[in-house]
Length: 186
Image (cartoon, rainbow, N blue to C red; front, side):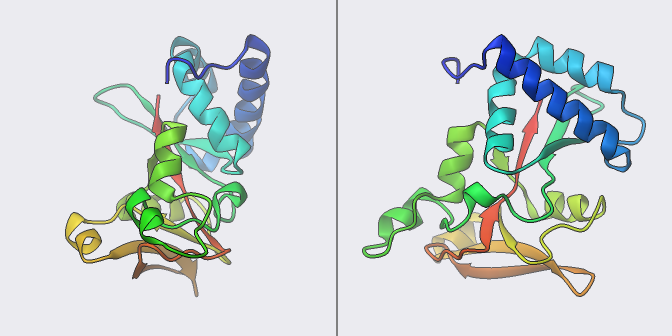
């Protein structure tokens, strides 16, 4: 991660995008102040590259919470649908490796690791859905318990009929409407 840095111009441009989104969606972060978020980001420039990757791939990252113990701000991908540049991927590198034909370009866990972020847990996904309506036409891989993964499965969520649903699929499967949503603590 230390080699992955944004230039001053790129950082400034990203901060502008994040500030506009922060102001537009105040319902996602009640009680938080942009000046404090920006100061935290400027104090942790290594995290800016990850946020930029979230933005570049269509995630529209936004602040959704602050950890009272650590002081970290928590960003989630808040794009209306699952991020466009992360779709058509299987669950993890093992699933990608297991495919003999028609391999997807990457995996959710592999991309998240490369981006320096974590994919959402089911709990985080459900918390996100309380902040708006997401994945009405798409779905997102979520962290999967080891026991399910050892048996070849993986979990994903979406929102349909005003409800959030949790499903399972083979970890090696991939679909044009499924990607993943990430989180980053700064």
